Image (cartoon, rainbow, N blue to C red; front, top):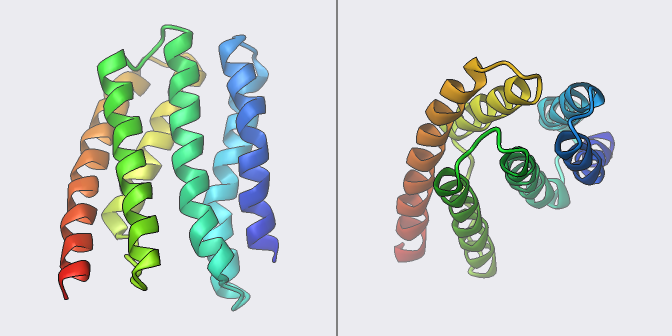
Amino acid sequence: MIANALTVLRIMLIPVVFKLVVNGSPWAVAVFALAALTDLLDGPLARRSNNVTEVGRLLDPFADRLFISSIAFALYIRRLIPPLWALGLLVSRDAVILGGSIWLKLKGRRLAVTYLGKVATAVLLISILLLVAGINLGAWIFYIGLALYLGTGFNYLARGKKLLDS
């Protein structure tokens, strides 16, 4: 239950972080870090307490996608990064993966998250944190994270197709 509450908290913090980033508030870094921390804690807490729920399995990846895309869009509005093409790739990847996950769920299949997928999400979160903090190194890390993110997206698509074909 605590894990799901952390995921819901992350979703509730999205508009707060978005507004703080767009306004250039010094609080943006702290609130972003708090929201990102909920992502690090929710899964391990659910597994340790033996309280992994179907709601959590569905809500956590949705919260991750929404959080990353929203804050990347806030950075775009501030003209920091990403350029429109990179933002488009990020959001498109998320939309395709989310739609595919829903489709698989409706077909009674479930696609497990990969370790590389978790790494790609972590790299993007770190890069966005650095960008929100005004650290230019975040831009380079963002593009590395985006490349990993797109690569894992294609991997998920291939694995999802295999699941549907089997």
